Image 1 (cartoon, rainbow, N blue to C red):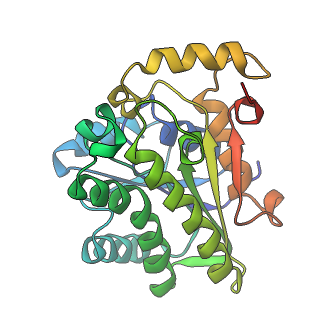
Image 2 (image 1 turned 90 degrees about the vertical axis):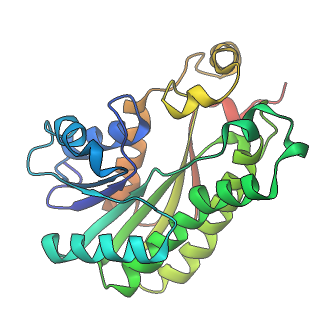
Image 3 (image 1 turned 30 degrees about the horizontal axis):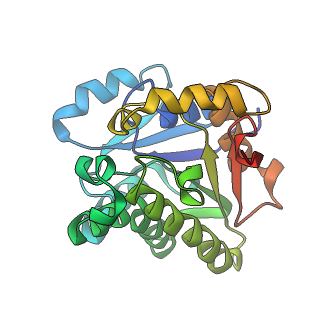
Length: 257
């Protein structure tokens, strides 16, 4: 079990179909002790039921992953109750529905700022607060989630592609900054998966069909597979890997036409 004795914070779990849940399951099965953040105090019972299979895990409400004071308060409480942690999984992203459904050129200033704030800056903020609060163990690993739409035009992904491009650039700069202290930072670029977030993307089903046709392995990726890749990046087995975007998409990203 490659995460035996490690404490991993997973930010943004929503339901059992989410990528964050797939990562949690893989990390737990590899020995990790899990800590979660979620949105909405009203969701407390739902979240406790969701993570009940991960024995010994804890969940903390975090309403505002891109708000400095809110994240600082939540992280301070997490450290006080759990001590230092060995890894952070950032699974936080959002864009306004109209900015996904309309042509990109019609993205509003507010929608552009919102997508980048929640989906990209929140990762920078989490890294900074964890560092300033001395929350990270030596050789800790930070992992965030991105998508192929950061580098290629994907229909109806629009402003989220821009936000993910900013996120990937942030991974590289954070890797350089935190590498001085032996902390690694990477991203997993997962293939499309039927999650709650994916429902906001128009004609998402057609994307899944294309992957099955074009990807070298001719199938769509699962949350279990993405979870396994993230678990590897959280473990010491990947201790020479930082600043990278690791694709878990059954090879689709290498294809041309």
